[in-house]
Image (cartoon, rainbow, N blue to C red; front, side, top):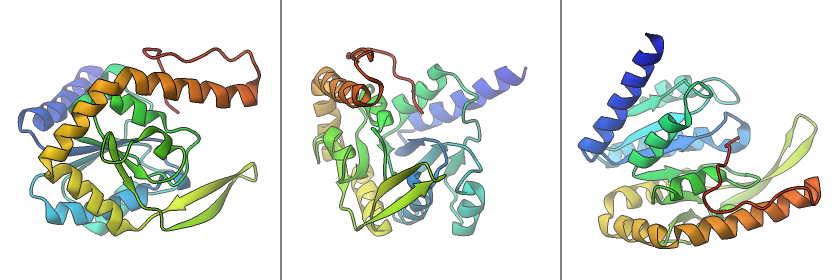
Length: 234
């Protein structure tokens, strides 16, 4: 029964977003400092004030580096769903959200690769991210997504194990980009069409690039990644 209720709720959210043509934003990630989830919430507050029917779904851990629910309440965001189901749903359920969304938002300051962008491309969905590697190696500005100009660079040490180079950006720039994507229907349709045309090429080239990076770490035993391969998200 619990499983049925979860799936029913999931279908209801997806149905509302699809049937009512609601411009909705999707973010799927773990809850770490470099993920920029606070920036996304702050930017979305401005988006909510400038658009009538936008909606944001964040599929992440409710508590981690950021206390998402507390932050959302402080900002008084109304059109938001924090799933609180990270790691508890199937690939089919996650794919339903990718398929129904208008734009995938990647607010991260730093990523090793940024695989969710490719997942969004599978469903012809444009992506938003900061104009820095690796995001600008995958997204073609105004063709397959929008790149937000970086504002500064800072470093973050993760558990004394690794230093992340963080490309930060202004909240208002992210908000402006999101509004542009959800209100400029001509631009949105153009990007969706471009992604659909170039999807196999994008996935193949990006997969080869990822394999090259992995081989540097794990050696030659790492097999190539090809278009159509199943990719596990971290």
